[in-house]
Length: 72
Image (cartoon, rainbow, N blue to C red; front, side):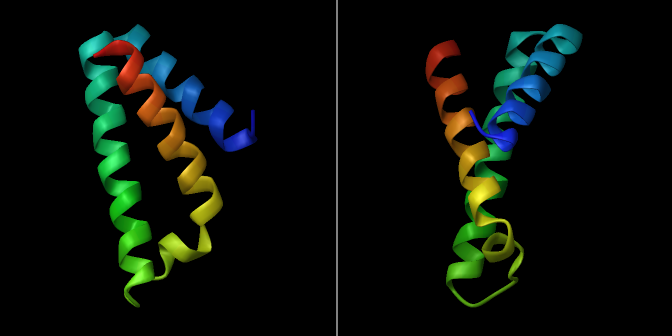
């Protein structure tokens, strides 16, 4: 597991512990949308945040997708 994946797992566990599973699922869904949007924007020539952090964002997206699939 990469550092980015570990960091996202820890964040999701923190949110779930603090606010409950529904809030952690909502956090994962929101993160998925934001990070996917950043990559799409970079690919279309817009803001390059998504291009600069593509590997980290893709790792986070994979964690979010897995978390959502396991907990919905």
